[in-house]
Length: 248
Ligand SMILES: NC(=O)c1ccc[n+]([C@@H]2O[C@H](COP(=O)([O-])OP(=O)(O)OC[C@H]3O[C@@H](n4cnc5c(N)ncnc54)[C@H](OP(=O)(O)O)[C@@H]3O)[C@@H](O)[C@H]2O)c1
View 1 (tube, rainbow, N blue to C red):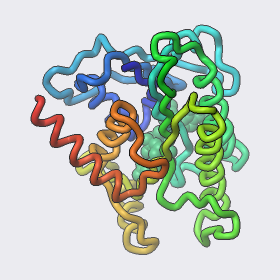
View 2: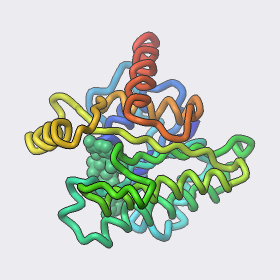
View 3: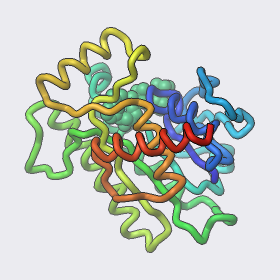
View 4: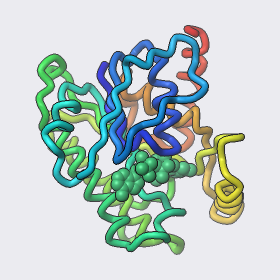
């Protein structure tokens, strides 16, 4: 299957690419980002870098034809482009909203409309990665990062509605991880934020490898349910990783 990973240069994206290059169920990967995707580190046995094509896009609001050509014919897309809560303070609100919301909507619309000749009989699977605290109900605005949480929840809703109204052309899921833990791979600042998040805000935890394994599993094997909560990501991810270990 041909997989698009949008936001492949980020924290989750790099692990996802690392796992996908050794996954036998993935035959081709387009890593889409605003800069080239680095070659994965610590690859598992059987990794095949020839499956990976790094595609750089400099306009996520109006995709150049050259980029559209590379994205055509995909079976699934895992969407990871976002401004995370910790970075949302550092840029103007409108810019954060554009990256998190507008880019997601435009990306979904663009990819869903591209030719998929060899796989047109099956729906395009679009998996949007959001966060545990993103809130879809405007009347339940959280006390912390309220506008940000509602904006991410709005993006979740529009992705799921797009799929619902696509007459079977698109199948979507929203993944809602809590704090993503990666022992040894996180900076001191990230570790401090994770501790605060867990103890004060009560955010659940999931391992980076589990999140990536779940997203790949759902892209390949089908979407279990349209909203994947933190516990689902741990459960599906652990099972998928155990299966991968047996193969390797
Ligand atoms: N990390 C966590 O603990 C955590 C927890 C829960 C949910 N999540 C969610 O998981 C998803 C992935 O998170 P992550 O930790 O991998 O985030 P990340 O490391 O910040 O990566 C985000 C990706 O978005 C891209 N991006 C950011 N701003 C952009 C812009 N203006 N134009 C184009 N691309 C842009 C980044 O590109 P560059 O690499 O070029 O910056 C990168 O590819 C996000 O939706 C996040 O909210 C993360």
